[in-house]
Amino acid sequence: MPTMVDVARSAGVSVATVSHVLNDTRPVLPGTRQAVLDAVEELGYTPNTLARSLVTSRTRSIGLAVSAISNPYFTEILQGVEASALEHGYSLLIADPHDDPGHERKVVQLLHERRVDGMIVAPSAEPGDLVAYLGRHRVPAVFLDRVVEVPEGDGAPRFDQVCAEGAEPTALLVGHLAGLGHRRIGLVAGRPGLSTTRERITGYRHGLAAAGLPFDDRLLVHGDSEADGGERATAALLSRSAPPTALVTANNAMTIGALRALRDRGLSVPGDLALCCFDDFAWADLFTPRLTAVAQPSRDLGAQAVRLLLERLAAPDRPARTVRLPCAFVHRTSCGCPEQTEQAHVTAPERTLP
Image 1: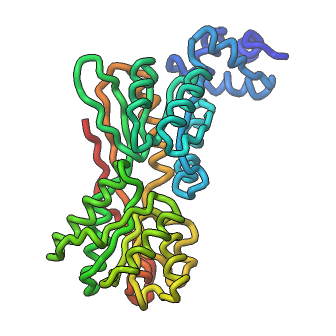
Image 2: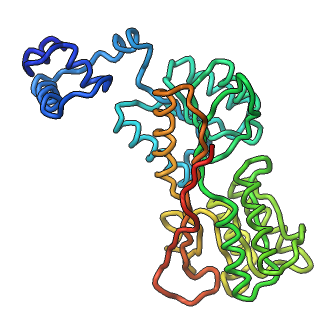
Image 3: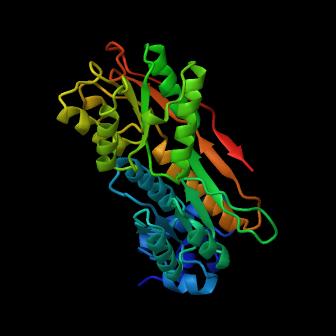
């Protein structure tokens, strides 16, 4: 089996130079770097990652704790995380916290015990134990998709965060429906306690206010971010004495549930009820009618989370940042607009908050 010494001899460089190229620990001239990589390829050299981790205290691995991995939104985030991690020479260990605070704490501890260099976590609605564990053990971490308010002060843990804009895109959906003449617009909101749920409710209320419509709490129901919950919530709205004429669903799973509830009652979209959804997904334009939606930059969120984590590993004491990525409004026909060429435009510029 070829060794690093063999690679150095073949490339005509020192062992230290080979180490710098393979571990990316110091800049190396492009020609020299390519010579090392060519020698690695020619000899079939495989770095001993276990030995390297014992020397550097780094395992070149990242822990990812994300619930509902089967959800297409989180699947695309996972693809973004994986591609970016591999690009930078990191492997990925994945766990599903099931949006349960107790299980979340356990899987994060298990990932930590596997000596991952850092973690990317989509926190639950009650992340207190998670924050306490990460802070107590000084685990470099990035919160993904959901924002956590961590008290500031001396010794407070530093957590970078990356998420999509939530309020403004939801307000845009409400405004679009109001512009089509709807005056009773319902919202199927996500799981209480999640920052994404709070932000989309805020956007819903802002959209109503901007259109001159009153907020009616009977038109806001929680679907708990799941298809079954979305179905129950939509059924509850339809049973009102004055049901909504238009509906905004706050994630893709609840959109599926809402469509089930409408189908079971023999109601059509948009004939009986106009529908706009937060979260686009691959088959949204295959429905009849095609779904008008807000599309989140899922893969970019995953890639950005990896970049923030690697920057944190390189500079542990730098100020924490929250990066918000823009969404896109994808105009189709479930809102009641006539068939047209699909249009998408970005709802807001990218923002980085200290």
